[in-house]
Amino acid sequence: SLASLPVDEEERLAAQLLLLRGDSRHHSDAVRLMREHLGVQAVLLEGALADALLPSTDAAEGIPAAPGPSLGCLERGLPLGLATAATVEAPKPGDVVSDAAISRWIRTTCEAVEVGLINYLNVRVRVMWAAPDGAWKQQALLRPRCKVSITGHGCISWQNTFLGHSFELRPEDPAASAPVSFTVQHAGVVSIGEPAPLPEELYRHNWTAVVETTQALERKRARAVHRTFTEVGFARAPIPERTWAALSTYYYNNRHAAQREDWDDLGTSMAFVNWWESQTRLIPMPLRWKERWHRELMPTVAAWAGDVQLQATAFYGMRVYADASWLIRHVDREDTHALSAIMNLDQSDDVEAWPLLIDSLDGETHSLTISPGEMLFYESARCLHGRPLPLKGSRFVNAFVHYRPKDDPHWHAVAGSYSGAAVRWAADHIAVRSEEAREMARRLAAHSGHAWLA
Image (tube, rainbow, N blue to C red):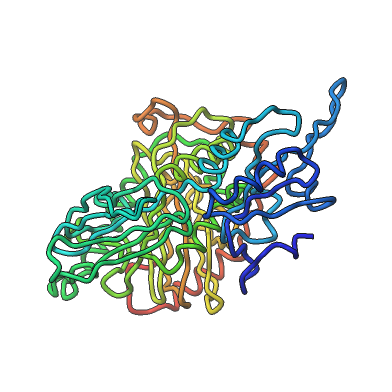
């Protein structure tokens, strides 16, 4: 059963697993080759467990059922309950596969990962790799004073490497910091040093006035978008299971590696999040994984919008909000953020409901909550949205995915309305809870300290 797989105290896989079907001729070949692959742990599957994790394809008219694959892998940190949705499959039992092909598949599919390296020091840092012969070889040079923000991680050096490989981050000036050594156990981020302190005058700035100005501008921007795609403007849905398994796993493996999110690039003329009161953090995501998740989510977003042909434009996060965080009601970039989704990845046990206040296309304000594993579709350049009430709780983690009509950066300037396909999708999926909106209005009216909330 699944209970026989190695798990940690959170019921997540405690190792990267190579799955071997016991009745496959590839089984003995893979076991013999395992000494070359120290980053994964081999698990022999038989009976019902093999059928669950390495399932056969269903029979169709005139086509017999195909036997299940002989190999697969599961990622460290994966929730045990999502194991059947996340198996990466490999050769079928009837395939002729050489030792070299099996070994290459294990290496590229089960062991290959991306690791993002961040240098906060004032000096350059050499990325040294421990080669099999014991020598240290330089792989990259990290530029100094990295800043991590939601709009760009250009200073992060993403390295393609393998599980079990060892690295050392060595400052060119040894007096700047002790080296940081690590062995790769999963995809993720590693940093050296601490972010530079922000100027004190930023914390003393009159942010209340800035927020009021920003809020007024955002209301004008929302009215400038002329094209809509759906009847309401937003909807809740579950994150597709395979994508949710991967997102949840990556977040879990890197939950202690969140980096300070820098907002000072915006200057003091605009403000969306109260970072000067409650610092947000980011968990940068590997480029290859972001591309995959962007691609996987596109059909779901397109279906909600009436089967619009979409182009992927941006994938932000993972953003970690802390206690007392709030987010003003705003709209997103017109040229790139036509159709979007907020995905909730985690909430701490002490979090109280932290609703998103969002305007539907008819101008009515609604209050919506989502839980880990859920996402909220929204027309993000048209519908004002935000979380204006301060978060009560330690942690609330979201990721944000955005699309626009394919090859149409000026989509927002052309008037248009929703399609019949979007109406049919809404009839099957949407349930707007107006009682939540009424309760939110009462809470906003009672809230003091920020006049602009209402």
